[in-house]
Length: 503
Image 1: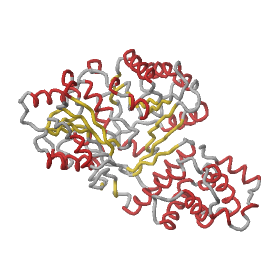
Image 2 (image 1 turned 90 degrees about the horizontal axis):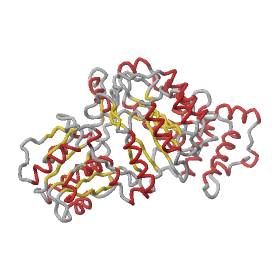
Image 3 (image 1 turned 90 degrees about the vertical axis):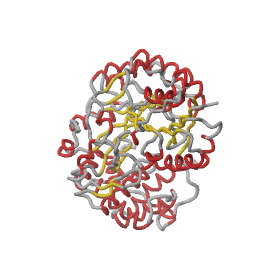
């Protein structure tokens, strides 16, 4: 019978809880009386509690993150009503920075802050031996990476078949970008490379084909990066896909030569640009060579098959609509495959919180603690960019509007897409649950009425995009008078190709 249950609520079924597997791997003899149970944030707390209470464990440990703190709070509240004798231990980034703790902390018996592999085991041993400590908050103790037991054997067959498998070749980050909790790290520490590659080989032979690296700086140490990439090149084929987070201004020639060898649909790079504004970069302690970043993004697009996912953050201290517009326009010109427009969120413990008063950073008190206003950005302006980001995902990032997007953006991407965003919201009243056919009809109206795009051109590009969706029947815009003869001029076609965004 399990005496210890390790659990969390994942954002989606396809995700797997890497941290729980690390805790389980390092429980030693306590593994024999422990098990992992994973749930999703869409599951009902009462159903989660019912499953957790099967066989009445003595200890339940929860991994708490910004995306699940509210749901775990509801679950723990129920648990304490039904079985108050069970010891609840919380860990994870959302509870690792006392005294800045969420309400759920009041319900817990113990909280392990920071890294937990060693401290969680020691705490469980004390509790099960009748020697439970008096202090509620236990500071996690770091240990050398080579002394940690591997989590990888604890991905089960279902994980291998149906879930993303997370891996890490290093921990930590040497950079001090204040919006990120990795700014608290002293440096990045690599795992022993030979051991790591042996573990990857075992996962590969078990059938894992989607490896998501959680390293904050995969391309920090080029020799190790190249060795890992060459390891996977030797096994290329059969659906292998690799996801890395990379430093945008650090692509030495040796790394470039290796990246050029990867075939299409095998690499995804998450590139954190965040802002091109040098004043904001200095304010938040972000070191980034903007010109080198641009040069590297152009090189990746032109010389590799990597899917480029670039990030921008809106709402940083000192940011304005004009600053953000400049960064967005520069990034659009570099033609990444996706631009993730993130709205700043308050992370407990992040050094950025030192700017809260000076820049009047006001956050939502409820998770995910999104920024509501700043000294330089009012609430209404923030709401406009929230909608902008949502519509950008639907139109810019979805890949469904490859023909229409260049006409929409033209030579003023941010200004025109903001106009489109405002108009879409005015017409629809929503940024959610817009059926695809309706979205096409709304776009036709916005393009012709608000962006002054000629009717013939708007119909032509939207028709081309609509036909690729596989939707049955005609959208309303396709039934209007003159539809069958809607063909743009050769010059317009040439202009459209020159403006192509690159989906």
